[in-house]
Figure 1 (cartoon, rainbow, N blue to C red):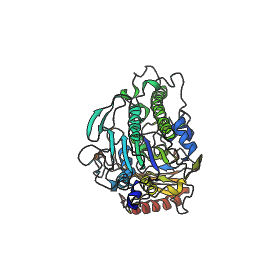
Figure 2: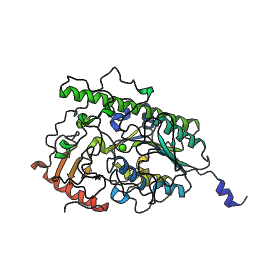
Figure 3: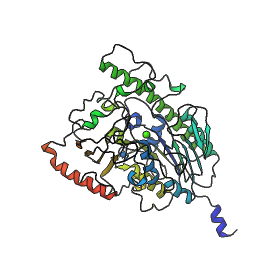
Figure 4: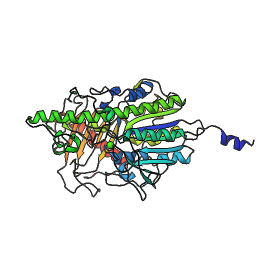
Length: 475
Ligand code: CA
């Protein structure tokens, strides 16, 4: 046998990557993150056999923009999806393309949410089968390699079934990268029959900030339309009982909302277990990096809200648990600051592919291995573009989070971004000391005691913005 052909037939020992991502699953709805409201034994298993990351943040807490950042390793002003209305241009460089070009088998099953047709279909995948738009919970319509089909069943089960089917037919001599991306637990939180009766006879604990009055905070917080009273008939699924006080109704709405949300989470967790079981049965556990995350966090009644979008902790924080027995200690907890920007260069690093210089994140491989570089980031830049969108009315803002502080600037303009409304608002600032005020109830921006921090953080925000090639709205 000639040496060349021998090399070609040698087994490729680079790790497999199983990248499980759900939609809108907040860390505080996972028992490994100390949830007060539910149990997620299968996701916990990844954390127990791997590492739980306490401070993984998204650069824009909304679905499509976060997904574009993950694929490209670039902020939204460069990856071209600043809002839900902008479609992804799949001709640009993405990590799946680079993995595919470098010998990986690649697939995405489930949520894509970056547009269809034209240049927006998934690209860089040997196999793709994605929900149309947001997708339905029941009998979802999906586009399989360009062909639209209905898949009978419950979305979380269907997406896992199709993921397992693809794994079963793969070439076992080459590594794979599979994105199993769930629709759940996205609004309108429709559980399957198996989980429909969970929590039926209990009242779940309310978050301490359910009745937040937004005193001290920017107008943006008061004007946001994602309080319990903004849950609609489709969200609630039953009529609101008559005769309750306003406060009682808020509590009632919270119970309706959180229970359906957690029922959807329970199905995702079961399906994570099915994938882990498959890896065990196939002897792939040691050689496969398993990640469970969500495209951003979510408000679970926190500050009186559902949804995300704000730079506040509950939506900024992505759950992020990773298992890779070959390079990671079991049961670790890590507090380094990670970003969704880092995922693409991380996957490329494991594949032995050099990250292109225009990717803006850093490989997490040393962090996963417990060898975080000394010069690792201690602050992050965030930007939400979809100013005063029709449904939620969140004001556009950008800001900086350090280990201790968060400075937010509500610049309050649409700037022509599709999906943003041209309703200019007076600019406002917020500053939080996360150590003294972890729930961000006390905006100290105007406090004389905090002007040193205001100055330093404003300067650092400008530096980050320049570093990432973004521009201040007001100079
Ligand atoms: Ca989402």
